Length: 178
Image 1 (tube, rainbow, N blue to C red):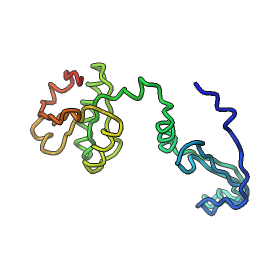
Image 2 (cartoon, one colour):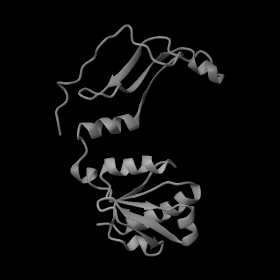
Image 3 (cartoon, rainbow, N blue to C red):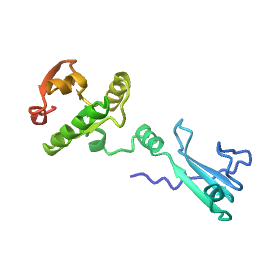
Image 4 (cartoon, helix red, strand yellow):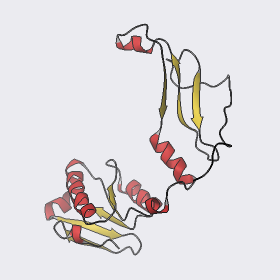
């Protein structure tokens, strides 16, 4: 752990503006020191916001944080324990609703076998999911598209060697992913 108490500071900037027009008083932003990322959180005072929802005259103060931004900052500053950073061995691509249902079921079986795995958080183009796996250093990807669903087999690719092979859904949870 690091003692970050000496790096915390408050800067008053009377020109600060947030992109939402419901703030009526003081506003604030939270930034991480030592990274290029902009704000990771922000909020402020609002007197009329609840009136937009039919409940007038209730002032308030709020704050929100961007979890994805905090994750990126933690990654840039190498704040994750080594076991977490090296944890994921296999990434299941998310290629649509039916495909991801099958992928999620297989992912659960892989996890029960003691292998750390994840499924990409939303259906995206192949390129984006490949880049994610490469950036995270995930050695294996599992692709289940419509043709794989019909065949009852997934395409498993080792990103370290470039080798890929079709593996039946029944056999996939027993793969060592090593």
